[in-house]
Length: 401
Image (cartoon, rainbow, N blue to C red; front, side):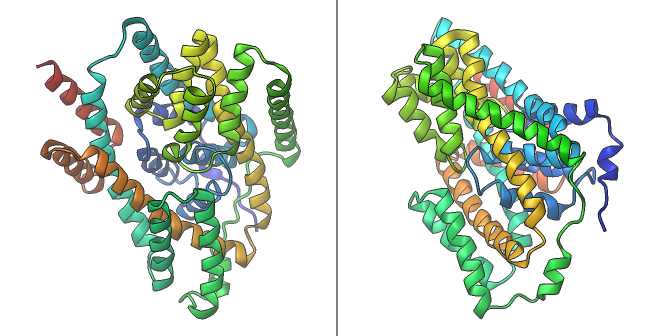
């Protein structure tokens, strides 16, 4: 029997959208995952199972994973308009921040204080990602089969194998290994885990929204074919990256470099590197670096065009895939596939932690940053907003002194 999202229905659209604005204002990189889970699960808007299903689902199509997950959750809870407003609000803080940094950078040159802040933030993210990894490991790496899939995903990512190939490999392994290694839970118990909450709003209303979004998607493609102006090329360039790139910001970044530095020569390699640092320094999705590129190409209008082109394909894909997934998730083989994806995601998260540690923990003081943030979020349950705010103030104060 279907159930409505009663706890989410009680909150006004304004407060709902404001919640996503706060996440966009306070969460960095993979720490966004912790913030989303704390909000959505903590307020009982969706169950942990539904959020985890979303994490598995958003890895099956292109786009930045954390942005896709936020869109998925908001679409389930508030329908098309709710997801549109929540997605916009989620991106708005980081867009405005990196727009300001872009103006400073291209007006006055390299900003020296970015590096110490960047290193402190990265160290704190390491501690928070470790907390998230332990939670996922406890929940999903509970037998030899899951551990095997996680280990293979980790090794494949270590050798820079495409994220989509890793996910597909995990799904095949989960289904194949299940023939020989049975889970403790029976198929009946697995099927009972499928959530019965319906998507928010009438299907006809959601369908109209999807069709309208699809028309814009096709229009973007047409612009790329026929509009060879500077802004037309900028829109199509970011649209191509957002439409075809799988994985996190780190795996998508080489494609962005190809477009911005090598193909169009909009940025020098040094400028591109500084743009990546700004993307790390500002909260929200890592790929907000597109705003920096757009500003360099065509000012404020360029920043809007580039940001829209980068994230719009993900928004469209998420609406379509969520509708399809909601119809097929009751099948047992889908649930098996999700188990495989979540095992692989845990292994991939371990690789992200290793990569971040290698880059960020370059001195004893950064180990201290990481350990303190881990303790505060895991054992003291301190909101990530305060962790980052305190860390940024201390790092900036230390630099000025």
